[in-house]
Image (tube, rainbow, N blue to C red; front, side):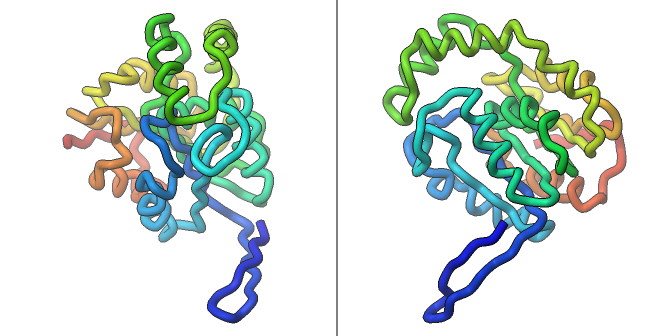
Length: 234
């Protein structure tokens, strides 16, 4: 990726061939990822390699409308700007990363934090999600939203994960009341080697806000963790 900018009065061009891409989840409030603490995350992970955060379609400062299909296109487009990428996805961003990863030829590492499976989105939950989304992001009708989730529920999301050759880490909290812990286990089981599972005892859904968990992920990215199963308590 080439980024042209100014540093003071000087024109500068930044060339980046590798990057870690952070994927946000389904929004809970208005605003861009910059306003929601993802910049601090990017600074933390930038000690490993250049880190990119962005708003998915329909969210924050980006254009367009929310749909899982759009989000997959977004991530594939962003990733195509680099020769090598790693991806760190949170919640819905992790689901999108799961769908996008098999499409990428340049993926080195994949981290899925609290990855949901479409089976958990029952009708009443979808209605609540859509009603809230109408207030904080750009999303189309409930009929279109629910139709897409139903299509996901009928899709085999897990089988393609068995062909991923990149290094993989799944992270899930045992007290996650948004995405059941069992989802993380199912995703981990579907992944091919090499893979690791970080069990966060007492961890809730918002693990990105937990410094201990994030530092453990940084350690994994640096190659400091080789164990297949890791457990920490928060």
